[in-house]
Length: 475
Image 1 (cartoon, rainbow, N blue to C red):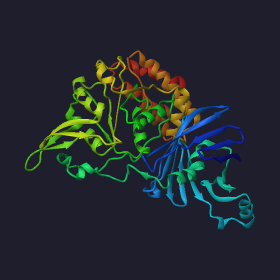
Image 2: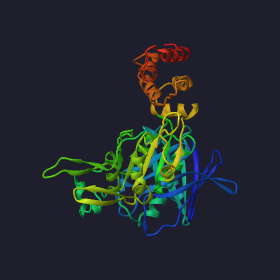
Image 3: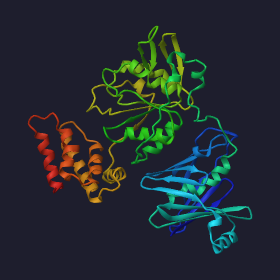
Image 4: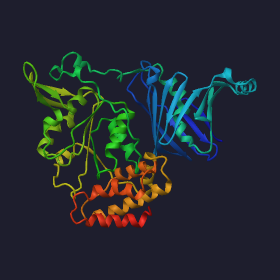
């Protein structure tokens, strides 16, 4: 069994991995009586006298939150875990590859010898960690006002994945009397209820949230940077090729933060401001202005996602300057002109492939300077294999490696045609290969080759790509 010892101090927690001698430190920042959620805690690796930042815990819990809404997200390096309450005695911990059920230990179910041994050491609370069967446990001990913890877990599992559980009770103690300044249980903004935005009939529009999302696999630290910018409310532009994970990243952030989420129609040369802010629709006795994705995100205090901003007419995008500068936009309705203001959690994010090889439109410096821009690219081979395995956990390792090599082969060929290839087709092949109902070569042809050679008359590209398949795949 792997073991780590936890020592809780007044303003920090020190976690020592006994097998590797690595030390992790989590600091507890000073908090006021009223807090904004989530509360963020930095995770540092202790290296001698120096600290190296390796991740962050984001915590949603406060006095006015029911326990089923308590949850902790940990992002560290290339892994994310998500701890939540099923009920007062049961928690669920989700990582990229596993789901654990964690039960509060009932002392009455321990035998006498176990109880005596634990009590002797000051035991006062514990958790049993299960993945179908018990795979570990976490105990808390108190002696002379000092609190320590002991995590024991089977060798196959990573201790860092259980950091949220290790500090859970301390965080609950820290935050139990704190009042959240913004409660996510409020579905309809106060302004809408009072009729401030009466022209949009907002009470008839349910709050939209992302109910399912694929976990984003970080490649070069872009995930943590993205989260920091979004948490601060900065407008963020993700610039990268098709299929590199831009939309996955945005939707996963909306999902784990439980924020209202509104997505514009995919940007194109015909996109107008009406597509973004809303359009006139027939009504009795006169037409009304129906809200677009941007307006709904602003008044419902959520995320507005502008997908594929690259081909949109720059003249249209000038209409967003006010939103980017001060979260305000003026719209016209049947009641005249009205200023819409974004709430405290309103966030705007866009994506696109702004490489000059793929778009002839150049956005103005005045527009681009209003965004924090993150450049993204395809993951390397190791990262690609990791993504394929996360999306298709049962696929054979050799198949995932083969599809990755073939994907890189295809990209080399497609460069000569000023085209590219994302990960969607490769993911589809790996997911289908888990069932093994069709020959692998046929799956590759259907999901990867044919979409790239759809409009060919002489099938030149088809033949070049098929040559790559024949070299890698036997069946």
